[in-house]
Structure formats: structure tokens, C-alpha cells
Image (cartoon, rainbow, N blue to C red; front, side, top):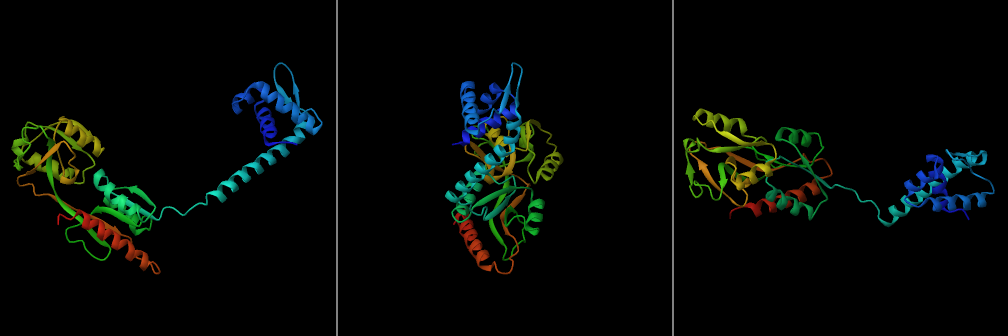
Length: 294
């Protein structure tokens, strides 16, 4: 009886033109390939290859058998795929595409994603605020965790938190423990530039106007790297308070007064999906309540 192993060995030799190369492709020894081909030739009653010192080529019966072998191998693969699909039926995924701006800290996103994942198969999509709002409007994502205007409210908006931008420094920094600093207090500091910061231009202008022109130990769009280098003591940075990691301290900047408002925006509700929209809104309210200081 012809077996799949016979077909695989035959195709490997036919495609490579070499018993040794076929053995390497199949991760077996050359005698194993030779034995399989000899058994197949006995079963079909014809020599399938002409062998000489330089190369191996198909005989006329071998050439006639080649398309049959390819059809058999394709059939075996379809059978494998059918068996896998029957044992592990594919489930629709994702249930929810969540857009996230890059300046949401990892710990916050972990809490949000963990609570959503209890109810949905979640796919994360990264982008800036403008990009995510466009994807919401176009139906490419169903939910965005992004910046909210101070007056932005409505049935599709769930505020999460409002926080100030603060100076973040290593816990052992001389200014650690100070509640508020003036821009001039930072004139001699080494800075870390968070290039992903949505308030980067406004922050730079504030310090430039105050006569602060710092040196930079790092300029990066990688938020985790920036904040870890702050914790390591390479420099200080200005960031939303929620981004300050363990091992750092924060202080507000006098006369800066910049805050940001984070929250969820749901895609517009389509007819027939009101129940799902209500379910998601209720979950988001519970998530928001978990961040409430009360």
C-alpha cells in the first residue's frame, strides 16, 4: 500500500534532484529516502528515477506519476486541515478592537484590558488621538482610550481620569519630596525627552519662555524606556502623573497648569446593536469607577 511517506519522499527527490538534498529537506538520513523510493517503485511496478553520479532525474513513468503524487499530497494536507478544524473549530475574533494612544501607561492599560478581556476577545490598535477618532468614525475600531476635551461628554463618552502634567524624577533626586518646583529650579537639570508626548510642543515652549534650555540624556518615543531611565537617575522629565513608575517621585510645576483628561469613546451605535452597546457602556462605567479616588 502506498503511504504518505512514500509520496513525500518521492516529491522531495523530484523537486531537489538529489537524494541527499531530499534527505536534508525531510530531516532524515539518505538511506531512509533510498529505501522509501525503492518501496514506492516496487509498489507502482516501475523505476521512477534514473540515477547517475551527477544528478537524479525522473523516468517517463516517474514524470507521469509526478502530478498524481502532487494531487495526493494536496489531498493529505486538506485532510489534515479538515481534522484540525473539526477538533478546534475557529471562533470569531476579535469581539472588540480597542484603540489606545501611546501615552497610556502600561499599568493602566493592563487594568483596562484585563477587565475588558473578561467579556471580549480584545485586539489592541495603537495610534494618536486624531488617528483613533478617524478609525472610530470609519468603523475600524469599536472603542478608543484617548484624550478627551474638557467639555467632551455624551452617551458615547466615559471619562476615566483627569491628571496634571508633573515633573518626574528618580526617588533619590534632591528635589524628591518637593510638592512644587519653579521652572528655574530645573535650569541645570538633565532631561529625558518623551517624543510621544501629546503636549511636547507646549511643554518645550513653557520651559524655553522661562529661560530653561536643558541638555538631554535621551530623546525617545518609547515611553517605558523614557520613564525607566528617569527612575535610573539619568534625567528628569515632564509627564502625566499616571506615567510615573515605581522608583520615582513627582512634583507639580508652578504656573504650568497643564492637565489631560483620559477616557473611552465608543463608536456610534448601529441599528440592532443597542443591547451590545449598553453592555459595553456598563462595563466601561465599572472600569471608570475602579479608577475613582473615592
